[in-house]
Amino acid sequence: MKTLQEIDQHARDIAPDRQKAVYLVTKTVAERRKAIFAHDYPDPDRLRRLAGQIKQHTLEHLDHYLELAEKKFTENGAKVHFASDGVSCNQIVLDILQKNHCRKVVKSKSMLSEETELNDFLNKNGVESLESDLGELIVQLDHDRPSHIIAPIIHKNRREVAECFEREGLGAYNDEPEVITRRARNFLRKKYLEADAGLTGANFVVAESGRLSIVTNEGNARFCMAGTRLHIAIVGIEKIIPRDRDLALFHNLIARSGTGQRLTVYNQFIGGPKAKGQPHGPEQMHVVFVDNRRTEVLDSNCREILRCIRCGACQNICPVYRQASGFAYRSTYGGPVGSVLSPLLAGEKFAEFADLPKASSLCGACNEVCPVDIPIPDLLLRLRDKGKREAPDKSGAGTPPMGLWAVMASQPLAWKTALRLGYALNYPPGQAFPIPALQAWQSVRKFPRWRGGRFRDWMKTRNKNK
Image (cartoon, rainbow, N blue to C red; front, side, top):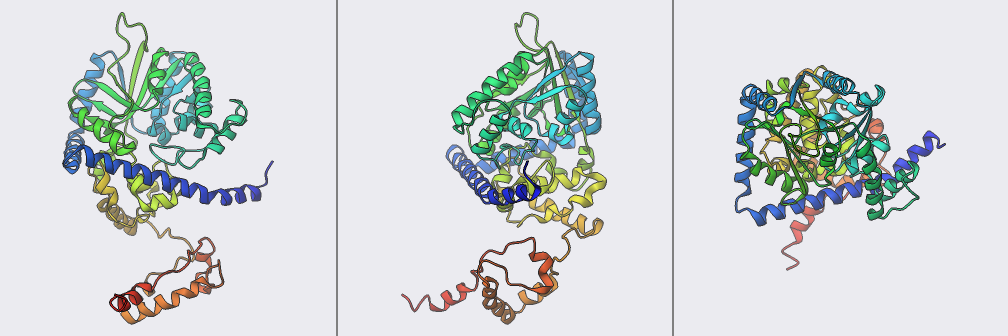
């Protein structure tokens, strides 16, 4: 067994590879998103504004649309439950499973279930709950957690996945993607057939018709429902949209924003349990609407964050997320959306996450790519203000005060001098220049090599070189 020191050293060794992988994947997807929007629509911003208006309208009339959705689901034969928080959500799911003598569950991807820690709860209470999304399955087998809303194992490489599958008995080590996928398929097919119940989330809930809309690229949500006798969907109350016709807009936006596709591969519309004469499908369907502090968010000055459709576009474009990855945010949701949503959902523990809104350059890119036009930079500023007023400084011991910076940045001569002296930070080679007052701060940070101060020299000589 490896010692803690060996584990820490291994983490340090692979950290650069992980950071590079996160950067390259997010950059690639962001560029693909930009290209497909530009190719397909003359004015994509108009679509984003429209989608934002629809979602905002729904939030402002959420009581009406929740009642309508409950009525329509009931008419369709589904049973509707309401959970005030994550604890009650988990308990409702467990009660349904136990009442129907279900011991094995296959589960489709759901960020809400990560939020409530549903898998751990079910497993502790004697119910085997297995993730069926490939990325989520690997996260579960590794006792890890997702680091991205859409790509949960963006922080892992195929060698780590192959090692995981070898350890779990899915086959000898082989890191070929085709082999990994085939082994996962063979493993999951048996689990689908053995399962008593299927558990899903939902990308959208249509109030008008009482239907769930689930989009996937692997078809696993469809398998979770096809062979089981019971279907449970847990859904955040903010996932509602008013009409069926709105799905055309949101399906186009979520696919292009999340993965750069025109349409996701599998699109399901589920309104209730199987009908008479239908050969396959669950005999029962339960929909659990979950609050978990969402009404508190709705009552705050950051309510626009509830428009989010969990596409991950803001994560892909964010320069801070690209460098830090999802685990730096210490919560279910990372990136710009997590910097807003996590402190709000923390409730009385707001102070523990009050530093997250500072994890942003406020460049505005997250707002520019958001398919529902959430003004994330504005929300970050509002939460920074809230943190200043309500939470103690969480920046940590040894963090340098900004007063000296303010003086230097407002005095041209001092600024020019500091740029010149910045090269001292490159000495000794490969190490940060030792500054006694900043030792605590420097002990957990590695400075890049200083490259500043050249622009002014270039400006002075640019005409002479012509």
